[in-house]
Length: 399
Image (spheres, rainbow, N blue to C red):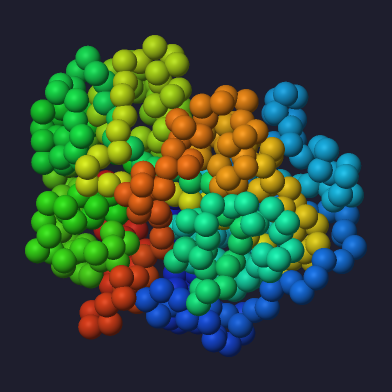
């Protein structure tokens, strides 16, 4: 799912765009968080005749048509009803999605917060006319008009779902039950070689969340807006942690197996991994720590170069509709984005398990955002570090 990969030329272009170097997509006029500017692109005015096909770039498990499992299919009926043949391609990382969208070959993409700004800045996705999405009204208000899916009040997509990066531990190995990230940072030596951490530059934000609570003198207000001094502090913390990490995980199935066999006993996780490990007999518990946590909110966005925009809008509307959104959320393991989806889940407790309607819970979650040189916390007297710098520093941490 969300693993790491090396920066390519296309990704570098997106990073440069976010750093204020512009793009080849037109003049900039819309200003977003921290001074970020977006290319001057217009949203679709009205739907036309369906073009007959639509190409989708998505996280694995988001666009299932029965080819992987005949019982898991929410695309076939849409194709019959809309006349739009859905051609889907899965990606394994946000970095990969950014690179692929640069080709202009995809009409729709499911973008996490650590990718969406890069796509917007590069001019690879366009503003969305949410009036054309009939199910938009039922999407949780807290997922709309966020710094990672809108610019200057203009939405760039339809929110799909969300989740938190939790702390998980084996109850037979880690005692007492932890409620703080200190167990994987300051106290990690107690479990040397059995600590696990997420393998991505964006994990630097997890360290920043901990430092916000434990070292307030650093002045961190947003874990994705780190100046050089703040980044150094986060990197130093992660280098210290690395001495005790037995495995950095990227594949959620492998992390579940590691907790099951006991090679990992404590570390960051997703709710779906906890559920999977527990269902297979692993004695695990998970919690949203007292300091809060990072997390993700994914957004369906339309490609600026799309030649199938009517089909693209129709598909997005279908994917965020209550029944389909519920099916995806259950299959993938996350909180749905549509409020009405909670009435459509097979498991009546799904939304309770994933805190779909618990805004107090998600108020403690710092959704992934792409770090840029213009500080996302609003500071103008200092330059913040961008994702390219985070990627460089992550290589130092991993060795």
